[in-house]
Length: 99
Picture 1: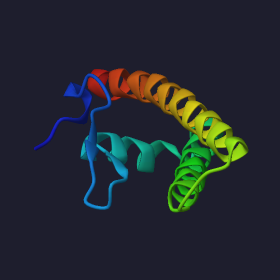
Picture 2: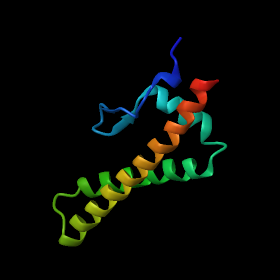
Picture 3: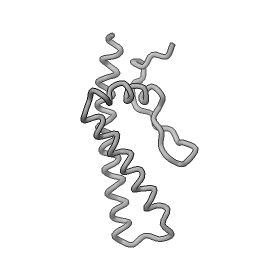
Picture 4: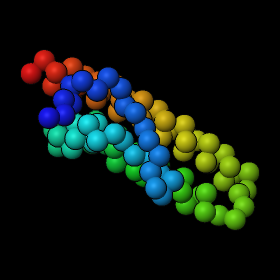
Protein backbone atom coordinates (compact mmCIF):
# COMPACT_ATOMS: atom_id res chain seq x y z
CA UNK A 1 0.00 0.00 0.00
CA UNK A 2 1.24 3.49 -0.85
CA UNK A 3 1.86 5.66 2.22
CA UNK A 4 0.74 9.22 1.49
CA UNK A 5 2.43 10.46 4.65
CA UNK A 6 5.84 9.35 3.41
CA UNK A 7 5.83 11.96 0.63
CA UNK A 8 7.97 14.87 1.79
CA UNK A 9 7.41 17.43 -0.94
CA UNK A 10 5.34 18.13 -4.02
CA UNK A 11 7.19 16.72 -7.00
CA UNK A 12 5.98 18.19 -10.24
CA UNK A 13 6.30 16.08 -13.36
CA UNK A 14 5.77 16.95 -16.99
CA UNK A 15 2.48 15.84 -18.43
CA UNK A 16 1.99 14.63 -22.02
CA UNK A 17 0.25 17.85 -23.00
CA UNK A 18 3.05 20.13 -21.75
CA UNK A 19 1.01 20.93 -18.65
CA UNK A 20 2.12 20.28 -15.13
CA UNK A 21 0.74 17.49 -13.02
CA UNK A 22 1.04 16.76 -9.33
CA UNK A 23 2.31 13.49 -8.01
CA UNK A 24 -0.47 10.98 -7.33
CA UNK A 25 -0.06 11.15 -3.54
CA UNK A 26 -0.56 14.92 -3.59
CA UNK A 27 -3.54 14.61 -5.92
CA UNK A 28 -5.12 12.25 -3.41
CA UNK A 29 -4.46 14.71 -0.59
CA UNK A 30 -5.98 17.55 -2.60
CA UNK A 31 -9.07 15.47 -3.43
CA UNK A 32 -9.43 14.50 0.21
CA UNK A 33 -9.05 17.97 1.73
CA UNK A 34 -10.46 20.36 -0.89
CA UNK A 35 -14.05 19.75 0.30
CA UNK A 36 -13.17 20.79 3.86
CA UNK A 37 -10.50 23.46 3.27
CA UNK A 38 -11.82 26.53 1.48
CA UNK A 39 -8.37 28.11 1.12
CA UNK A 40 -7.00 24.99 -0.56
CA UNK A 41 -10.07 24.84 -2.82
CA UNK A 42 -9.64 28.49 -3.88
CA UNK A 43 -5.91 28.01 -4.48
CA UNK A 44 -6.48 24.93 -6.65
CA UNK A 45 -9.20 26.68 -8.65
CA UNK A 46 -6.98 29.75 -9.13
CA UNK A 47 -4.08 27.52 -10.17
CA UNK A 48 -6.22 25.98 -12.91
CA UNK A 49 -7.42 29.42 -14.07
CA UNK A 50 -3.85 30.73 -14.24
CA UNK A 51 -2.78 27.63 -16.14
CA UNK A 52 -5.59 28.12 -18.66
CA UNK A 53 -4.83 31.84 -19.07
CA UNK A 54 -1.11 31.12 -19.53
CA UNK A 55 -1.86 28.49 -22.17
CA UNK A 56 -4.18 30.91 -23.97
CA UNK A 57 -1.47 33.56 -24.14
CA UNK A 58 1.16 31.03 -25.26
CA UNK A 59 -1.06 29.95 -28.16
CA UNK A 60 -0.91 33.41 -29.71
CA UNK A 61 1.45 33.79 -32.66
CA UNK A 62 2.95 36.91 -31.07
CA UNK A 63 2.60 38.82 -27.82
CA UNK A 64 2.29 42.52 -27.25
CA UNK A 65 4.33 44.07 -24.42
CA UNK A 66 1.14 44.04 -22.34
CA UNK A 67 0.63 40.33 -23.10
CA UNK A 68 4.23 39.54 -22.10
CA UNK A 69 3.77 41.42 -18.84
CA UNK A 70 0.46 39.64 -18.22
CA UNK A 71 2.17 36.30 -18.83
CA UNK A 72 4.90 37.14 -16.28
CA UNK A 73 2.31 38.18 -13.70
CA UNK A 74 0.23 35.04 -14.25
CA UNK A 75 3.28 32.80 -13.90
CA UNK A 76 4.29 34.51 -10.65
CA UNK A 77 0.78 34.22 -9.22
CA UNK A 78 0.59 30.58 -10.22
CA UNK A 79 3.94 29.89 -8.55
CA UNK A 80 2.95 31.71 -5.35
CA UNK A 81 -0.26 29.71 -5.24
CA UNK A 82 1.57 26.46 -5.84
CA UNK A 83 3.94 27.31 -2.98
CA UNK A 84 0.99 27.91 -0.66
CA UNK A 85 -0.66 24.67 -1.79
CA UNK A 86 2.60 22.90 -0.93
CA UNK A 87 2.58 24.46 2.56
CA UNK A 88 -0.97 23.28 3.17
CA UNK A 89 -0.26 19.79 1.84
CA UNK A 90 2.86 19.55 4.00
CA UNK A 91 0.67 20.03 7.07
CA UNK A 92 -1.80 17.40 5.87
CA UNK A 93 1.05 14.95 5.13
CA UNK A 94 2.21 15.26 8.74
CA UNK A 95 -1.36 14.84 9.95
CA UNK A 96 -1.88 11.72 7.84
CA UNK A 97 1.50 10.27 8.88
CA UNK A 98 0.64 10.67 12.57
CA UNK A 99 -2.61 8.84 12.00
